[in-house]
Image 1 (spheres, rainbow, N blue to C red):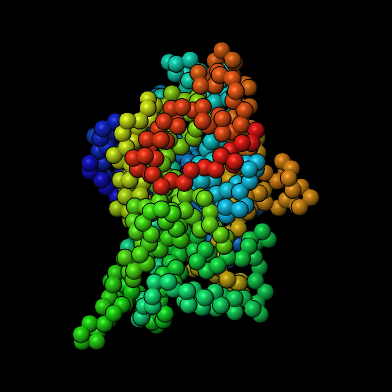
Image 2: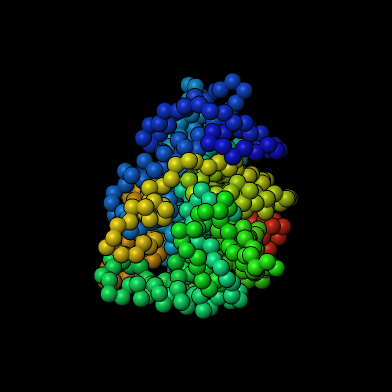
Length: 533
């Protein structure tokens, strides 16, 4: 396999090989839909990473103000799903954002609801994917009702559907996914908030963490700092979220800091560790930190100085707000989607084949193609014996040169005195191309801005929570003629959310193969959280 990490990339994909080639050209951009030449001599399926990034940033710009970060004080992350349609009657490719999400938060274990009415994971990548599920349910609803769907056409098996010829999906994220893909070497061209250090304590780092927390609290005293209404106080380590450019955790086992003015002087950012026999400090190449914690039962992070701080290639759970979570990192979820598809268990009932992202584009940020490939591709590359309709389908990996205007780095550049501390935005935004209520803004797992009076009612639920997506799916089943139901939905006894997921036999078999061969430590869902109707 030949791989290229360049701005412009074309590729040809089949079941056994992916061939890449690079070239330079110029493209025209149109607000939400981009039309590009389909055929270039010797090259097919053209993807321009900058055009994709610009398309997604423009879609975000058009959204209402509600839920967006406060410029210069709050930052967030953005992800999107882009539908690509190769037009059969013309020499063009149409690219359209069908789902977009922002967010950096997830709730803790104790906040999860057995009723499925809380949005557990509000990281941008998860928001974008769940919004895409809403879009796909709408398109299937049109198809089963005899209408025209721009996505699906009938498959050979009764009750099953496949993608329209020429339709595929691409995934964009403004930042390297949290978890394994975010463990990348530092280089001097990247922003490095934490300068090198001159001494190292033990690996526990409790003194340093306590000192950081105390200083953070002192810095807030005497200042009138505006915070998001629903945002809770976080520890210094949890406030990292798990993004590669927020490397404050790197101080967790360090005791003193050199002059910040010297932090970019070396060709490669380093930690300075023990001295040699001449009294000179060794310079140790450093790596970005991820706040995502290794799952229990497997290798733990050694927390050695520099490049030895993290274990790589392991499953990780996202940090919560002061307590553990059950949400796997976005690196892990993207790797899972590369085998099981991003459609999930419920929609697998209706689909002849799983849906895979042909390409993953990352915006301008600390990035390593090697780390992305390790996290999203290598870990699942040897999975075999998958049922019909499933395969190992690694995406093409590209990076854009365009940075999200509300990234942490850009927010730091725009920050002004008197604005208070810079913090991640407490709200998460979902927009998807659906007819009813395309915009959904949440905070702490519930709809943003609701009052306590509405607690326990449908008014507080996000359109993306398990219960709402399940109800959307049940509406699809009800709209399907009984004679046209997929075979797996024709039996009796399906009542709960868990019942419908378990009845998707092909998906469950594929998941069992993936778990046993690549992710044996992936935490199993608590059955008590799947019994809602």
